[in-house]
Amino acid sequence: MRLHRTARFCHALALLLVCASCLNAQTQSQFDQARRRMVDDVIIGAGVKDPRVIKAMLSTPRHEFVPLPLRKNAYYDMALPIGAKQTISSPFIVAYMTECLDTQPTDKVLEIGTGSGFQAAVLSPLVKEVYSIEIVESLGRNAARTLQRLDYENVFTKVGDGFKGWPEHAPFDKIIVTCSPEKVPEPLVEQLRDGGMLVIPVGERYQQTLYVMRKKDGKLEAEAMRPTLFVPMTGAAEDRREVKPDPAKPRAANGNFEQPPIADDFVSGWYYQRQLTWETDASAPEGDHFVTLRNQEPGRAAHVLQGFPIDGRAVSRFELSLWVKTTNTQRGPGREALPMAGISFYDDNRRDVGLAIMGPFLGTVDWHKASRTVRVPSQAREGILRLGLFGATGEVSFDDVQIEPTAR
Image (cartoon, rainbow, N blue to C red):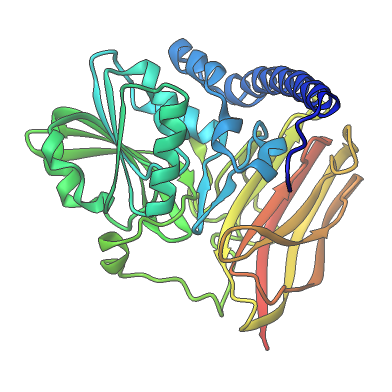
């Protein structure tokens, strides 16, 4: 389209630029407000205490690292797809892992899995240098451009296989891994200085545990922190994976809650636990244990999640069943603030492709079995099982959660 060099056109263009500037300023203000609310409710409210980490989360514009169509969701506590089958981690898990890393101003940190660049940006004001590696070239290049545009001058990036680390800049005081291998890559152990710290999610594809590991006399001492779910570490780490999930046979792991919790009473096999207790009672529908979620503050999160593999080309539907009881459960603010169970489906690029809900479970009702047939979208490659109050108030208990698939 040819530009007309007339006074009228120039005047209109000037007005358009002024309006766009005003809109950007207004949007930036809205992002700032949303970020402050997110830090208060999701970061501090969920237990992060380190004032330096809190300040870094307040000053880091997460929306700048999120694809434009998803920026409206930038300050919700959720992972978001960034392309190439990868995600930007939820704000809480970024803050929590950063706090676990015990960052010091003199630290040289290696990050495995640059992704969007958000975790590196959060680390930037807390340490001396950040070296970050991304295996997906398009993501690595884009993250480098974003970090440069936002003036994170002490962050250095490269495209490569994070399994191998970055030996040219070793040893590192701290290493943080934002993708999950089945086992800790040996090159990372070698590149961590003695006395240094490694924060890493390790385990099977959908059954991971976040560990803090400290290197002493050349060996790692591991402390389990909580169950979690990260995208897999690809490249050499994926080639070495021994246990691979079967997407034609989805199941609920520890659905009867009989496995004892790991550190800090986190229920094994389930993650993003909020306001949950592991109960022991011989009257439980299955075994001696179940979980209860409690909330008295309308709108506050009380839930637990579990990821599982599923291939919509192989599985047409499944039967979701569970036992549930409620005590004075009431709706919270908003249409979706209800006690319920839900399944979210995601495609190859971790885009949302469907949602099925069971419930709501309102009022006071003793143990009873609930079930429904869930149709699986053909493009589904991953599912997230969600149990909780989701902003509603009262108490809801769950036991014997099962998924029974039907082949196409």
